[in-house]
Image 1 (cartoon, rainbow, N blue to C red):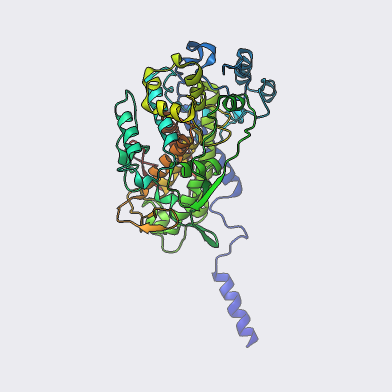
Image 2 (cartoon, rainbow, N blue to C red; image 1 turned 180 degrees about the vertical axis):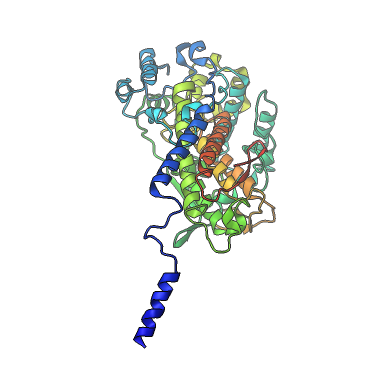
Length: 512
């Protein structure tokens, strides 16, 4: 019996293929060679893309005393004018591009500049941050900047009105009417769509994207999207001494008071969210929500969508999607920082408000004669912009907005991985007091709600008073370009190459 078993075992071994301990379609040396060639090929493809030009609006040389530029945290005189030598040192450091040079910039207080050297970090995926271009921001004295500031001042007055109450609200109607009559204003001007974005889906359904309302499946628990916001009625930097101290780089004395925990229902709630979020938080959460809906929500070009024996995870699944969203967000910040510091150095709205107070002759009469401005003057006794944050804007230039550039990149990545035209299951909106969610009958799509999410996060910074509309719109378009470049590099590295489809912000459909 034992002899029979032994012979049978030997026969089986002899007829079964023998595999090495390591199984791989390619020998290690061949794979190493191909990996190098792939990286070289992608580097060459990106190198062959011509670098975009970087035109400016000319304000730095045309407007006296650098009044059209960002100079927060540098020393200022009592009239709010930046010390010319200090601004010159900033320009010198940007030109030199060294850590040591930035350390030599004069300071008006203890607050630091926000990481200007980040503009010099090299990108190892997609195109280099310096290769991208955006159009110049509108100039300081232009009608467009004046119109944008009227919108920002309007938002400052209307931060505490619930989005659901816009239609029929007299204050909303008055601002909408004023914006509709302005030259070169590029946002919606009806009460129903006021302060919304301009891309597909932005003006459909509730003001907020479903991805800011839906529960987040976060590993072993589900997280609702109720947030502790800021109490209504709080506005900052409306007194001149407070404003000047903050511009000089002093830490704020005032503090913000917490409001109730609820779903986001007002502009102040949204401003609070984008004050405390981590860089790509909204898109990380959106990815988790989308992944919970299963393969039916995946883009049809994902090969695992129809696979019968293989599930997606590290390749084309949750692991890769979450990772790509994060990498796109940080690449977007690097490109935004280059444009902010090395090209445009656009002043923040609070600095524009300082000019409205001290040097209104530099500004367009469309703004200086605005009924919205007059309401702010009557309420606060100055022309300064009421800010939602005690410290005002961050200490980096306005154009383009960092939140917007992240939004453009991350939303683009998600639109590639998931079906643009798939319907959002069971859409909701918050109750009047924001304590619960209610079902609604609107038909909303993944692509439209991702566009709306990008606009919400972008315009949330306008609600706070720290950005203009053009900072956001152009930042989103820059981020979109970065997201597409990263996806192009990413695609060919896969053993089964996907063909993903997405609809750009301008409505064009493209394939990756």
